[in-house]
Length: 203
Image (spheres, rainbow, N blue to C red):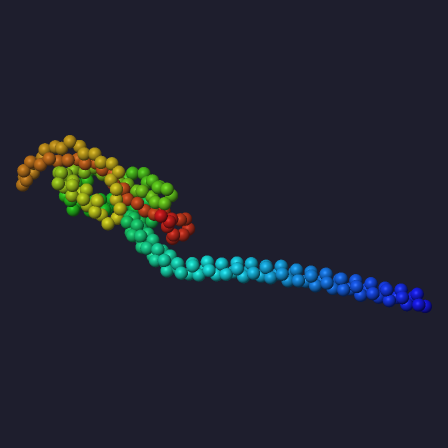
């Protein structure tokens, strides 16, 4: 019986020591996990802090961005106002011819021949419409017509220009004058409107 008791006590002692070792190992493992979790939490907090600072900087710049957008919109509206009136090339061509006719009448220039030129797309943003006109006038009248074209509120360009040799003519009430026969091609522009929408292509 004494041998059995001593063996039982020794077994209990080994069990107690084993449980202690397991407890120490478990505690060490728990402390390790806690430390790693703390490091992850610190990284997460720092990341969120940097994100909030970035948002704050963007909010601080909001006023600057809004003023720039207003400036760009204003310039865009000014540019669009210089297009010819008309949603299609045919309508714009008709408006261009009416404009040139009015300018010629105000300048005392006679249009003897006129004809549209083929329309042309430019970088898929605008369409150029043109008219070629042959005129009859004196130098002063011709210069006045060029001034009218240059100062027109909508953007017009003179793509080509040729002036024939002057001829002498005499009217009943005026002395002999030199008549010119300038031939010029004048162009205007309209924006390209996206199919199925009322939105023009960005410039």
